[in-house]
Amino acid sequence: MPDLTWQKSSYCAQGDSCVHVANAAATIRLMESADPSRSILTTAPSAFAALLQALKAKPHA
Image (cartoon, rainbow, N blue to C red; front, side, top):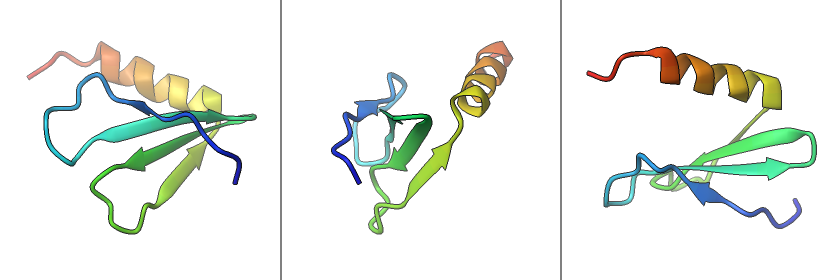
């Protein structure tokens, strides 16, 4: 796997549980920092954009 530049979510509170995102060629990679197995999810940029759009459209509780 190539070296990736990970960005931490701007909604990450202090602590170990944060979502990190990286752009890798034609995919988006997601990782949760508190996951001891360091599992990485891979998705298409269009699917990730749809997720972000849906999350932004939801009113915050």
